[in-house]
Figure 1 (spheres, rainbow, N blue to C red):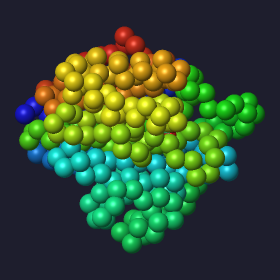
Figure 2 (spheres, rainbow, N blue to C red):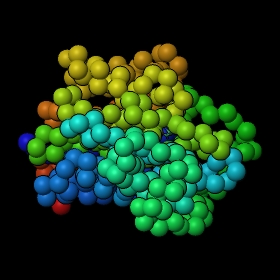
Figure 3 (tube, rainbow, N blue to C red):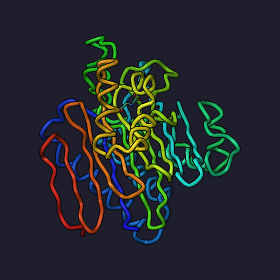
Amino acid sequence: MEPVLVVHGGSAGCIPCERRPRVRQGVIRAASLGHGVLRAGGSAVDAVEAAVAALEDDPEFNAGRGSVLTEDGEVEMDASIMDGRDLATGAVSAVRCISNPIKLARLVMDKTPHCFLTDRGAAKFAADMGIPEIPGEQLVTERSRKHLEKERQEKGAPNAACPQNLGTVGAVALDCRGDVAYATSTGGTVNKMCGRVGDSPCVGSGGYADNSIGAVSTTGHGESILKVNLARLALFHLEQGKTVEEAAELALGYMKSKLKALGGLILVSRTGHWVAKWTSASMPWAAVKGGKVHAGIDLGDSTVMDLS
Ligand SMILES: NC(=O)C[C@H](N)C(=O)O
């Protein structure tokens, strides 16, 4: 089976010109890294974890370092991962002071009888697993501080139709054995209440993976994505015989018509067809398949180059 790896860097409004090359490089680097895991014979789960961990380490994205801040000026992160072979899943929410929430979500999947740990319990589990605690400040960037400041001044309630929270990250993969997986990680929405949990750690909303259908990772207004179970909805349409493009369009279209909410998703089918689709102004994405890297940010700006 020809392996496929697709990543996204979050549905967004307009991305300022000076950031675009760094954002573009970030998604291409992560997709190439994840695809390298697949080429070396690694599993889809290992590949999506590696790709998302790379995006968490990149301060350009709203996940790990670079996460947006809560109303208290702190970083609280959510993440989830799923293995399409057996529907095994691991998720964490409201975690602080660790570099890679996606690695903790993976450990929840692999090492506990549970699917989802939160807050204090997740922190204790991280310590038990030997994950180093880092000062929360290390996750905070100048950009996220300014973003919170601006949001406080504007006192805007999160607007479903106008996503400004660039950067939730996600990956989907199909490996050489035909197994699929997804991973999604985020700092959530800027100025969110302490303890707010979004869609990203919720299986069925922030992502889904099932070997008999495919894998999907979503981004956008979390409360809306939760209400429509966006990830599972997209896979439902695929299961019903729609193409990956149609399934993505139908799921995002439903969320838009029902809730006036915008977002985006990446999807890979069990047969290796893939799509990156969004209804927001932009969504950085990159895909690697058959020696080619495809990437884009806005509608109609996608490029293809040889994998180096
Ligand atoms: N940008 C995002 O995708 C935000 C994320 N879906 C959340 O609401 O937590």
